[in-house]
Image 1 (cartoon, rainbow, N blue to C red):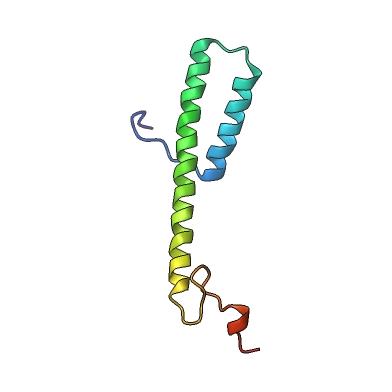
Image 2 (image 1 turned 90 degrees about the vertical axis):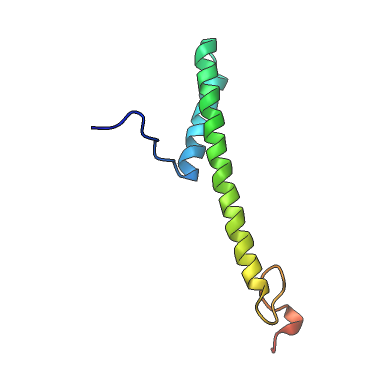
Length: 89
């Protein structure tokens, strides 16, 4: 038995993005009542928030990797990779 009050599983970025694209298509196609349009808009806002949260998480991970790479000797601050002039060959 499922609990209707339990939070729904959060979709992944791609799933949320695809759902948002389909929702926008439905809104753009028209033919909906005002109430239906508002409901779809609210769903779209939730999906857009989920997408933004995924993107923020990805940015944070990239920043962490970039920061840890800049701590390596001989590496550039952005990549942690030695510049062409610093390479032995």
